[in-house]
Image 1 (cartoon, one colour):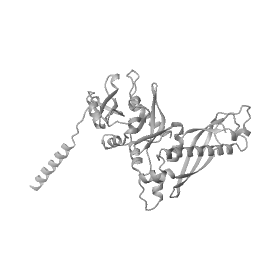
Image 2: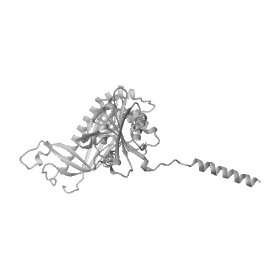
Image 3: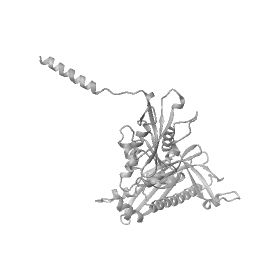
Length: 380
């Protein structure tokens, strides 16, 4: 009797478990997979949104679609977008979120990024970006036979530039980490549309979650160097001609020399030397090899590498000083000097108010650059 009761009990447990495992399924052909979302500022507190969808329909024109709507919240935008499509809108394949500059400047994007994080169907490793104009400009395209899915295209573009160390990594998780850390501000890539193509034209410096200023893409190298170090493919530097006068054989003297350095590595070490006002020692060790020059200079001459190393030291130091002064002027700290200050001082409960109002504007930075040019490559 007891054996029968145990068997019945086991059967009931199996039935309950199996019934709890039933999952509602839906064919891919009936889903609209959102691959990118863009949000702009509308009148009042309203938002304007655009979503790029990927369909698995049988017709080529059904592959890519853009939906637009307006509302007061991110979830509200998606609700109204669902009314514009015959397929159910799902966000499990969302890869990129683009925010218009006006929205990021006036309202900030923290609520929208937090909404992405709280959505269990989205991934926290999706990329974020700021648009020079509007997010709609970046994502919207006329439907043609050659139309591509802008969500997938932007994701691949950002990813390959991050892998090549041309762009600071900019996922939802990384943005929230920098936003909530005392004494460190987020950095996002800034996109621009020119005619019929999109490019990453600058880096957006954020004050908290608001857009504060932009730095041209060609100068992002100096921010990356201070922020995380650098290990990339190539970097172009413009050096003054004066140090090379005695080594230059041509009659016409240029004002500057452009040098392309490949396999470049920058290792940085930042130490707090004094508390108030803060004094930081910034030591950077650069290594790389010369790949190309805009002028005919014989790299076989004695002492030529030392001349290049000193010129690069001077150039990089000047650029870092200029970059830090700009960041102090607009009171943003993408490098995380405040976070370094916080971890370097014992028994300190540093707040953003204290750092940005009292300490950061008066901080001093002593820059030391040590460049080593490797004697290898076609030119040398």
